[in-house]
Structure formats: C-alpha cells, structure tokens
Image 1 (cartoon, helix red, strand yellow):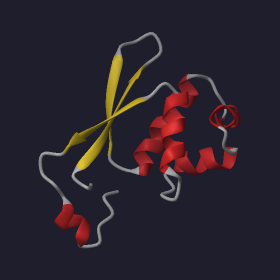
Image 2 (cartoon, one colour):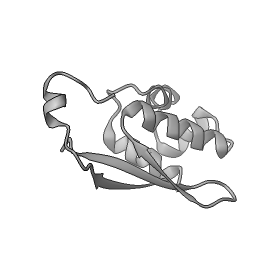
Image 3 (cartoon, one colour):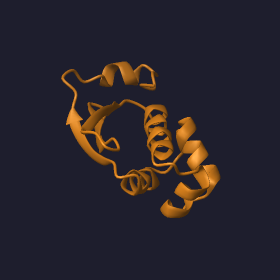
Image 4 (cartoon, one colour):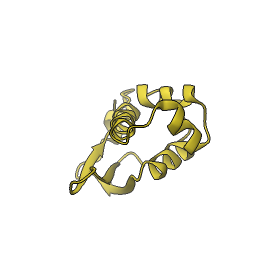
Length: 103
C-alpha cells in the first residue's frame, strides 16, 4: 500500500492537461485550494457542490489527515480532477515503519 503515490491529472483553464504528484494530504489540499480558486469558487460554494461543510473543505485544504478519503475523491471529481495510482520505483515501507509519516 505504501509503495504507491497518487498522480492527479487536470486541465488548467484554457491550457493543457497537467499531472501533479500527490505525496501527502497537505499537497492534495493545496491542489484542491488552487483548483477551487482557479474556478472562482469560494470554500462554501465548493462545499455545497461536494455535499460537505465549509469547515471540512478548510480542513482538507490545510492538509488535516483525518479527512475522509471517499470525500476527498468526491471533491476531486467535482473539481474535474482525475486520479491515477502509480507505483514508486523504490518502496519506502521500512522508512514508514520507523515512525515517519511520509509528509
């Protein structure tokens, strides 16, 4: 499980498709914030489209690790983000087992 990372593909407005490597909840939250702002949506507007509270969107954008993954996926879909998993070349399981979080 830990030897995979997320690749997020999305289209910038009036531009080409871009791939972003997501290594943590914090980087996923930053992508959500950037995409939301690019679309001109407030946190409240995005929350309404996703079906969550504005506070939950704030937690995601700040990288709070307790956000529910299913809701993160729903948020990606609402923002037009497509997600792929790709295997890392060198698994980091031993590093994670030593108590590191990968953040």
